[in-house]
Length: 316
Ligand SMILES: [Zn+2]
Ligand SMILES: [Zn+2]
Image (cartoon, rainbow, N blue to C red; front, side, top):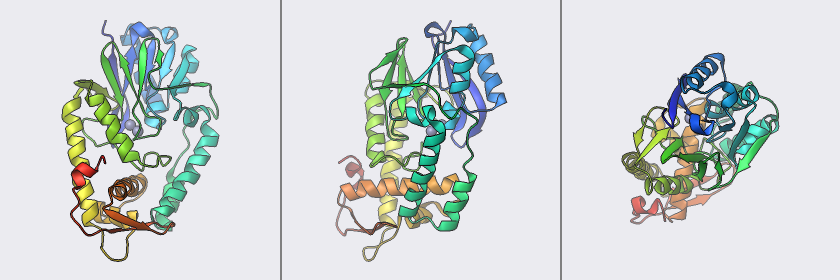
């Protein structure tokens, strides 16, 4: 029996089809998948194939609050009489879902306004956010970095979300959305609670890349961690340069204007991800002294003339 069994679940997001992980010897399921009957059937089949009865699942661990990972957590826990646990910073977004969803929509709307996203794009985005079919409240255990459940250790890897966690079991690393084989995880728009998400994210990537050669992503199959970590760093260095190139030296432009320059037309979730990523880069460039910021709603940036070594400044 393998220690970690991957179960493909759900129809796929831009990040790819979700990967749930069944750890039969520990009685644990990590990231059961998105809500919906097809994903539920696939998950149930995967638990069976792992040689586990539903009642043998004792703990449901979640890498982060996004619905494609956490959506089935409460349903599985309820059906198996299991506990749900995740990092403390993300736990309320699942455990206190209804109230936290309202807060999130409000917080996102404020962030979009700050980033200069036009009102019609903001309105369409809020209107397109559908509630997940999950309980308003549920008992979710809040874990901290280094804590273990049934021999599965949580490693806090913030950036994509504030409470994003990876898990280590039997020498295997379960990555969630920290690194993905076919997609660069969004940073900045995927959780608007963080102050400097790109710095957090790159620190998290470095932390796991220092310890692990291979990892199991939250979408797709086993991947080379060092290779992907290097690709992610190169991607963000390149993007930092393009953000800097998009800025005037006089006056100022909003993160939204920078995102339009980088990504062209954006709507729905892509508007939030694009503007959020531009904002995350501008925050980094600000810390490096390469840009000057003015205004509040919206905030604007201009380039500070001079020779800025943006690559190394990604982690000042
Ligand atoms: Zn995610
Ligand atoms: Zn995901």
